Image: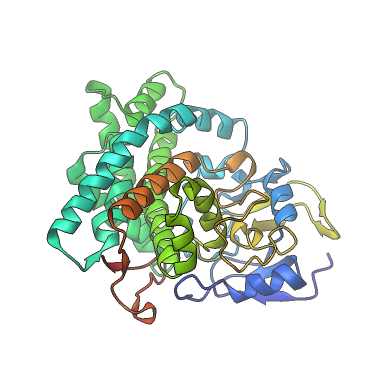
Length: 399
């Protein structure tokens, strides 16, 4: 089989602040569907970076997530975060069945009903933070605890267990841990939710996890599927949201003209959040691959049956053919929708919840702290290293 002339070795190096990955920047303009080799796993894979190619691949039923199970596809992590049989590594009809179990909880009506609780938590946490005086680490006082507590309440996780889940999160979403460490933590967190399922069978609550346990009792979901769903919701609810919102605050505080434009009219916030989602490179490298089940032509490139292919939503959000001047933050930008939450069948089920939490938190910050600013120079900020999701290790602010 003829190969693409160039295979790009991609170590996915640590990038400070919101710097865009230089390889993806180059591929967008020179080699939109490229061959890559990552640090772990075996062989090579295709990588699509342009907006329309990414959408086409992400929505093509001939590309399978389920076929990645037990296959050592070249990868940026020594372990696969998403469990086999979980919602991220299944195809329809199993994927459709699993998604339906949680989709209602994260639908528009239910998320709107949660807004009052998010507002309440944001104001409580800001009051506590301002009472202690500046400076404060926003990741410890607000952007970390708020999404963790909200997803915990949705799932019925006791508050005193959130720290333990945070510890497991740090290992599972790391690219620097050994496979043995990761497997140990996977067993521990799965064991936690199995024990919780046993308890909820006898003591159901008014929460999503109790609903999943009831579905398991009706044979609508297996126990491994139940635990993998819970793990996925916790990891994304705690880590991805924490980092996304922290990055949004950092981006606003380091673009004072954009921040002033937003402060002048907070009704602009929903649109501003969409531009922040587009602009911020929220993750390192790429997510889960897909396997072609037959030969597929994307543009002038033929992906052969059995080959692995990745898409980069982060790169697609910077496609210059879709977003003029894509490397500039423009909170008033109109045009195409960003792909920060994916596309197709695997579009993030928590997208509306994340947007709502960002709006609640940013509204509270911008309303109550008109003097909010970084408490350290930009070059003294510490950023997460060896992590799948990008964000500040801490976000020191004053007001």
